[in-house]
Each structure stands twice: as C-alpha cells, then as structure tokens.
Length: 571
Image (cartoon, rainbow, N blue to C red; front, top):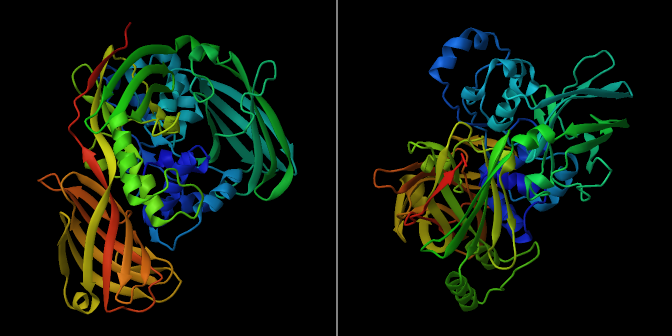
C-alpha cells in the first residue's frame, strides 16, 4: 500500500469503501500498521528517498566548490523501519483522533534536482532557503525553491513564553507549503518530536475573505528537520490554474503547543501571481480500454514550479461491471456493503471492486524519468520514480468503480516531448489456497505445500504466550499468538496475497497477518514473486495439533496492455 493512500485515509480523503479496505489491510499488514503507529506516536519520521536526477557536466565544474560548502548533507539511504506484528486495531477510530492533531508526513527526498534550470540569480535561493537546507523536502519543492519561488515571511507571535514563527512559504497552483519554528522564552528551539501535543486550526481565504476550504480538510503537518511543515493541496479546490486566486491568505491559530495552552494566531498572505504566470497546461484527452475492462482517460498535464501534475480518470467498462455483478450475485453478497462490522465475504467483495495502475513517463530517448506503480512492493517492477507524494490522490466519481486521479511528479523541465506508457493493470481476484499443517511435524522439519499454483515451505513454529513485545528471529511481535515462518513462490503474475485465516482441528478460526516489513519480496528468474516472511496467528494460546491456513485474495498483475501516448510539452 502506498503512503499516499495511508495519508488520504488519515485525512478522511477516501470513499467509505476504500477506508474500510485500508483498515482491513492495516489489521493484516504489519508494515502499514507500523507506519500508522509511528505517525500516532511520532517516535520516528517516515522518510521516502526520491531519485536524484543527474547534474549536467558543465554545471558540475562550475559549482562543485559551492556545493561542498552547502549546509546540508547529501541524502542517506532509505532507513528500514522496525516492524511490529500486533493485534488488530480499530484504525478508523484511531485515525479520527490522529486527524485532530496531525497527519502523515510523506515527502520524497531529492537533495539534487535538475540543475540545468539553475542560473546564478537563483543560486542564493538554493543556499539560503529552508526548503533546500532541510533534507526532508520532496524533489518538487526543492526544485521550486531553486528557481526562486520561496516567499520569506518571518512573522511571529508570542504567548505563554512560546514564540511561533512562520519562516517561509512556497506556493504554486497545486499546493502550499509553510515552514514553522517554535522557540521558548530564551530563544531555544522547542523539541517538536511529539507533534501530537498541540491543537490548531488552519483556514484558506482569498483577498476578499471568501472561505475557500470551509470543511478545514486536507491540511498536513509533519516534523521537518528542527521545524514543522504545514502543507495543503490546492488542485482539489481549483480544476484549472486560472481559477486559483492571485492572492491567498493562510490563517493559523494554535490554542495548545506541546501541552501549553494559549493563543498563537497569524494571517499569512501569499502572492500566487508569479507561480501562476509560468504554469503550463497541456491537453491530452486520450482514452484506452485494457483487455481486463479498465477504461483509462488521460486528461491533461499541468506543470508548475513544484510539480508536473497528470490528471486522469479510470473506470470499468460495461462488460467488466456485468462480470462483477454476476459474481457477487452468485456469492449472495451485498452490492454495496457499508458499516464498520463487515463480514469476511463483504471485505473480499470490496477487494474485488478495486484495481490499480502502473505506468511510466519516458523522455525523448526512451529513458524512464517518472513512474507510478500501485503495487505495495515497488521494487518488483522498478518503475516508481520521482513521485511528488503530496500530490498523489484518488477520488471516487459517479457510480461504480470510477476514479479521478491527480498524479504528481518532480517537474518535467528541460524536456520537449514525453511518452506515457502503460505498464500494468492490477486486479484483485478470489484465491483458493489451502495448507493443512501438522505442528508436531513442523517442529521436527519444514513442511512444503503446493496448492493453487503456490508453493509454500513452512518452518519454525513459535507460540508467544505474553502480551509484551518479543523479538523472535527477525520479527518483533506484541500480543499472544503463534508465529510460523515461511518461504513461498506465488503463481505466475500474482504479486500480493491477503485475507489470511487459520483454523485448528476443533474448528476455531483465527485472524492471521503476514509480516510485510521484515519480509522479503523478490522476483525469480522466471518472473514469479518469491516471499520470505512470517505469519502471526492472533489469539492462539495453545499449540493445536494442526492448522489449516488459507488466504482469500490475490492481486494479479496484467502486462498484456499496449498503450503509449506522446505528450508534446513545447506547444
């Protein structure tokens, strides 16, 4: 699952059915569960390292010495987050509390950008702006700062011995980003590690006071080096660049900072004219229907200082929708399950109603410069690249499976022509895998099961009898239950499996989660996905004689798509 989906869930930006799938997935996916827990506690920032575009040769020689003096380090490798396999949690309830205080920080890192667009007048912006000197900025904001779109603010307000300072703002027709600093009465920076200990309200108005965001939704706060970053996407509010007002005002009001109650209120004016002037829209208006019945409409590409935003719509064609309707009628499932207490069958129906895309953006020479990939493990295809995470969003439209998407990437500057190339379509399907395991036999030697095209080798059963966290091999677990390590080879073109269950010889059924964090996902030479991971059998208190393990949903990657669309940028 992509971080942008978790972010959209936390900001209440998903349809109810999509939120339910997120909650179900988080209950079973220890990796996503770990991310949400870390957001809630803010013990550690989520960092996604973006790709670093190459420097032109001529520029390298010119600024090599200056780069050596820059006050920020080159990007480190992406950190692997520790993962816990925990008992199911009511994430919907938890997310409501989280949204009152904070939202996920999903910022791609690209400390070096397309320097071919940089000239000496903007070099000072590159050196001095916090959007460059703090390393956790995404490549789009970095590039916009390089090109001189940072507006210095340095407005402050003090109460109860705490001073809030708005340092800088960077804005264009797709988004707004503000950097905050907080200091005590002695001028010492406050430790913002615990971002939960504040209450705040943010507003967005035009120059005559019209409230442009009355629901107060979509604001994201995150720890940003020693500062705080506040972000808001604008494209859901304005469908064209022309509709974005020339002047905006962000209203900021804190009533509690790190446990101290008070009043910190500022209005931040933002001039949008410069960024609007350079915005460019390229109409595409192309459509394709995949062999699986997914209709894709490419609408347009909007390029602004911090992002190139590709807008598209997707839906099922009539034949695919009829096949889906026939299946759920045969199963006796509800057409539109609602509520929080769905049955396992209703959850599987929701999975079956969802689909995903993977596509590449190629330059004039056919080189991959950007890509979207909806599979959880992006390394399987290696095409996910240069995404601007804060600009990735899907929104349901109409009835059925219709979706509108805004996919953001680091700006495609310096190119005259690009090619959109569809890579894959992902469809969820019912699975029938079943493995009956004698635990006495498993304790003596590994057990291999071949079923439904999958091959699983199970090993090292361990019964955890306490609620405390415990390190077992590479896996850290909380709560009582059983753990079975395994290695598996999935069927051809299947890239993910979910909806696990375990049943003992007495008929007791247990929820099972697969560890996706410490687990390994790779492709073999035959192209099939291989997994090395572990299953956590929640609530198992005694070792049964045998367990029957199943999974109900598998994600099928279809590569039989053939669609390329040229995008002419120099019109």
